[in-house]
Amino acid sequence: MRQHYAALLRRAASLPSLPLVASLHAAALRRGAVLVPSLIHAYSACGDPTSARSVFDGLPAQEQTLSARTALASAMSAHGRCQDVLVLFQGLEGEMDDKAVTVVLAACARAGMVSDGRQVFAKVRRPALQHYTCMVEMLGRAGEVEEAEGLVARMDARPDRVIFAVLLAACRVHGRVDVAERVARLMHGHGIA
Image (tube, rainbow, N blue to C red; front, side, top):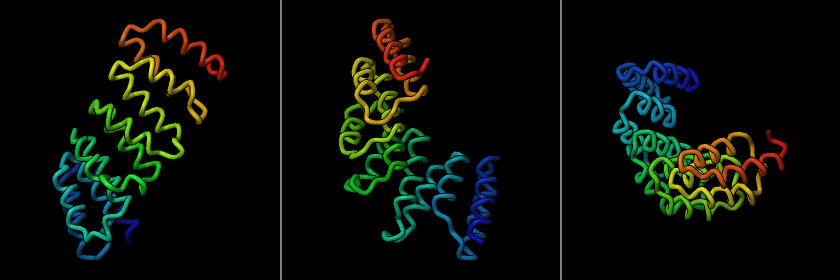
């Protein structure tokens, strides 16, 4: 039954239809089949971050799971409430999984919260490629192109075309031809043409 409601909520979110999401939410509550992350995503996709937040806030503390928290963080970020994303994970940094870290770093990039993004990234024990990509985007948007270049040059994960594209786009936006030339050599060194 839970999978059935999750599928219906995904479909309602893709429309997006707030009345349909609200009626599915009510029906799921009556049947005890509430899927919090799906509900949060559906409300957010329908442009209603307040209802998404209410779903989360209505949960008992023990049910405010990492997956529910990550879904809400993604919703808050999508609606420009990036500072709320940091507050949502305050004191829980050690419990964040790769997906949660990615959502937080993407929010920092979106909002230009470079200092906060650096602090979050510094606490990640084994950064994944998507974490590096978020950092390069954040630094590139802030004009810190050389720092982004250095990060890519010394990253533990193997860089891909996406991270190089993000870095080159930042070079273009900020007119840093010198860095773009070094990035081209770095790409060649990794076998990416």
